[in-house]
Length: 119
Image 1 (cartoon, one colour):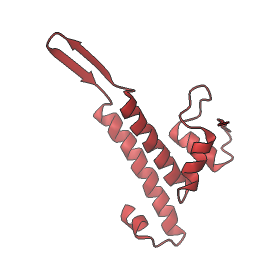
Image 2: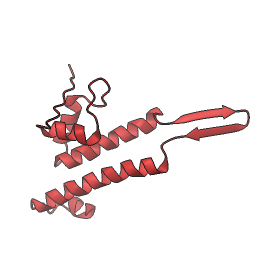
Image 3: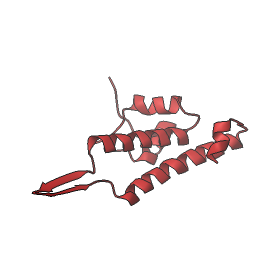
Image 4: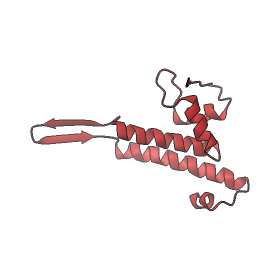
């Protein structure tokens, strides 16, 4: 059975990813532990895992209508969604996490072309 655990002492990479993406509320969480573990398993480091998890949350929010409100009154239709600044902020955080992940890989001696392109 899938579970949610978070240690505020951030004793594991899983806890670090949860804290970094803000998924720390056991009554209202986005990912089960197994999903966070999968992000970590499929990434070169916890920065890439956090970027992938945050991007998945962002795409899920956009697709589910969270943060989107529509109102139609006669011939007027207003649709409000993520403000451009909020979207840009989330995208900037994702980008910064990936850049830090790439920087750490490069510092560890990686010469993978994808890592070098991120910097």
